[in-house]
Amino acid sequence: MNGPQLSELPDDSEQLQPYVVSLRRGALQASELSAVRTLSDGFLLKFLRARDFDVDLSLKLLLNYQRWRQESPEISGCLSPLSVLGLLSTSYHGVLPQRDHTGSRVLVYRIGQWNPKDWSAFQVFSISLMTSEIISMEAQTQRRGLKAIFDLQGWSLGHAWQINPSLARKISSVLSDSFPLKVRGIHLVNEPMFFRPVFAMIRPFLPEKIKQRIHMHGVDYHDTLGDFFSSAILPPEYGGEGPGIEEVCQDWTNQLLRKETLLQQIATHPTADIAITAEDSLISGEETEG
Ligand code: VIV
Image (cartoon, rainbow, N blue to C red; front, side, top):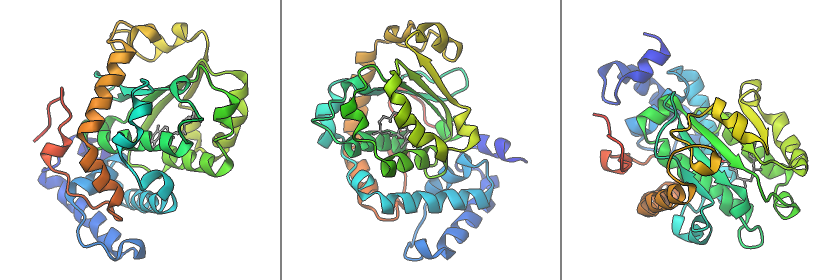
């Protein structure tokens, strides 16, 4: 069986065990993780699915993920939806209730809702990390990845000042090989001219594969966003007929708030070896798998 086919099997399939066992062995041998006692099957499967069951690549991703977290305590050390509730309440971010036609999760970020005087880039980044941790628990998202729509209307110098080269590096790392999620598309809409210098800081560190998945739609995005997403799932604000963006963001904020304890656990646990239970992974409105 090849990797993509293995990916389709459920978590408890016997056929996955040799891969889980071999990734666990590799991880426990690595010096970074020598202090870890347990690495749950569910945790390891995230990395295996993200790399189509290539154990070497999965191990590299796992070590990068641990290293990124250690090097970014200002972002990953506090995963608390309550601590950024003021920003979430502005409808800055939501996950569409429906996956796209390929099964990807679709995330929306509205940069204009972020007032850089009130919220640091680290806090803003932590919101993406929280959503990523939650959706990466879903087997279907592990298989089909995510797509993100960034609405850059309102992007200002105040935002740009917050993105320095070190943060740009951290952005490109999570997009390439430091988080167990397949990034299947990044769609920028309403990006102003002076977003270019910021993008120029991020771009050089991205692998070719990811670069090709970044689409700049400009202000006339209504014509082009529809080439990628069906209008049934897009909010009317983005040219679709799906639920409105305010509702989408409010619903997702509530989902995040329900995960406050779980997220804080993930943040404070130095090795992230959290046993993911069926109950934790249940995202309302969608069936879980056996
Ligand atoms: O966090 O798969 C200058 C994606 C993103 C993630 C994470 C994962 C992921 C697609 C990002 C996208 C957003 C963690 C796992 C990188 C957080 C960005 C936070 C900053 C502060 C937002 C500022 C605005 C950016 C806008 C453009 C970024 C794109 C080129 C990604």
